[in-house]
Image 1 (cartoon, rainbow, N blue to C red):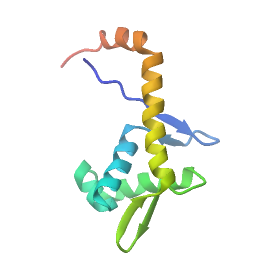
Image 2 (image 1 turned 90 degrees about the vertical axis):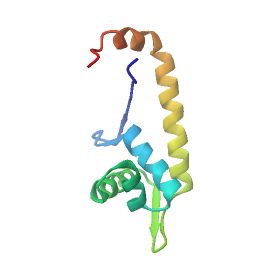
Image 3 (image 1 turned 120 degrees about the vertical axis):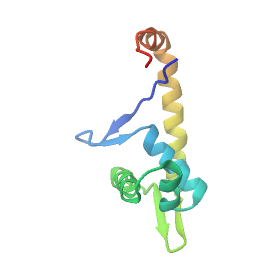
Length: 110
């Protein structure tokens, strides 16, 4: 079966996105304690990982990740954001379950 992934757009011009990729990066930062280690664990270039973190920090009033000479860590708001995303994703999939299953049946398998 096809895995459904969703993202949510934020900001006055919907210029900021929070989706599974950024959430996985936040979880990897929490696990590994640095942006570079998180990037390596996910197979991302460090610059791309840093851009994603920077985008999230710019999007919200409260920073999502804080960096120091010792590495990086999620702020309390960053941890809350990860939880909120998973909650929103679960609720959306539940609400759209029948429609999603109907679409999944139409996806080509390669």
